Length: 249
Image 1 (cartoon, rainbow, N blue to C red):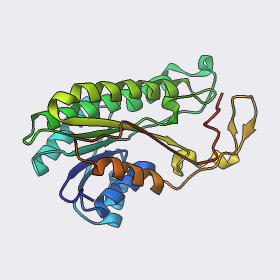
Image 2 (spheres, helix red, strand yellow):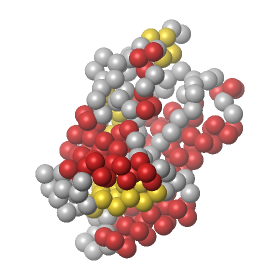
Image 3 (cartoon, rainbow, N blue to C red):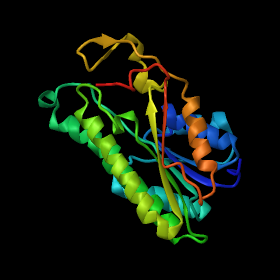
């Protein structure tokens, strides 16, 4: 792989897919900036993986903290080669009229506003560094394509991520910045711990859903990251083979 010596930022690195991917980048020889709200979990991830890691606690929905994050990256490394824009959250499913404004805002603040702030900071560093350029990979989720029942906040934000990805891809052409999106379905993590107990389906029933090892996601992200900037995986879907995605709804 060509990741040795690369400076890579991973958001949401304290758990789940972000943690797995940050460890994979470190094991591949990259210098990895891990960010998330829980510093102890970030330090645990970095310690277990070894390698050159910088742990920077950050709430991605807070513009001032995001500015401090990129200042820390610039201060230590002077540049940024790749960003995995992964941080996200969710709230319990419900019909839209039963979703509080607070829950709507909670999901919007991290999944969309936070993704915008991270992409904005990464794009700015990549545009103005020498040599110019880099890669941004957004975590879109399969909900960027089709919804689950009762998922208005999450689905709306993930549909919006696709628009963000397309715009970054277009705007990045002039600055050697590539942007792609990985849409993930049922990777084993804290967010999918209840999937075996049964989830609401489009036909009104509830059924357990299979999950896959999160390593398959990190392998896909590493493949996307290992390409030269002259090539780009624009969209990729990685999912548990038998999950009800194809034909959902």
